[in-house]
Length: 291
Image 1 (cartoon, rainbow, N blue to C red):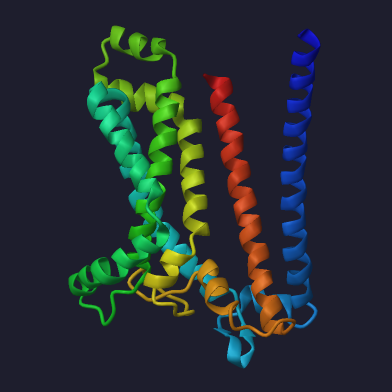
Image 2 (image 1 turned 180 degrees about the vertical axis):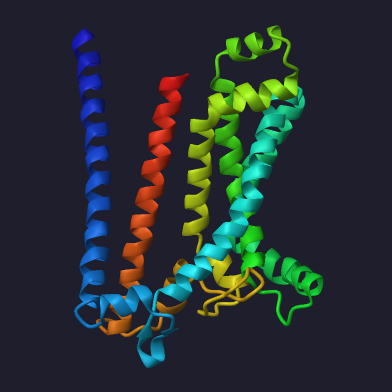
């Protein structure tokens, strides 16, 4: 009986190890495929013109990255400005003020929000939010970076709320008790003691929310206007890095300069994702050590 149990434990250990190694190999092969094709682009096109070019017109063979970076910047900025305060304050309410029943209700709502498909949010933005933005700012079109940012904020809020709430609940009770014993009220305790103590975990949640925002494709493809221009405000139509790949990869000629240019964008996105997740993981580990 003992040998059978050891055999099962050993088998499961090797199976899990094999699955983990397989995941690493698959991710490495994906990166290798993207990197090898993306680097071929720089054999046909100047790296300087790519990184500092102000035009993305594939039919005229202008592959400037700046309009796409600016578009991603405006959409991400709007989404973070909305999602960070909403997410943190919601987490504070759930952790410190909500009754057990209300806390459960909020958790269900947050989980439901995270489960809504991006295409559904795109339809909502396209047929409801865009007209509101258009009328509110007297624009010719409501398909702008602002519209995309608002919908992406809706997608990032569940991630920020969940991790911020977990970070606040993971704190030792002595933080709150010591602060209240010294005469601080609940608001002072939250903002002067609990939030600073839980900051590593909260920041990790923000970075993961940022990763969700920067990597979203379908929603921004539907509601940002898809105009690769150097937008000067979030009220302009824009095109993001991810939307460019999604919009053009289906019709591009395989092996062409345009084809490799899209893989070059993929390299940029891969590194952004890698850096974002590395920072988030570092702060999560710091939060665990701190608590």
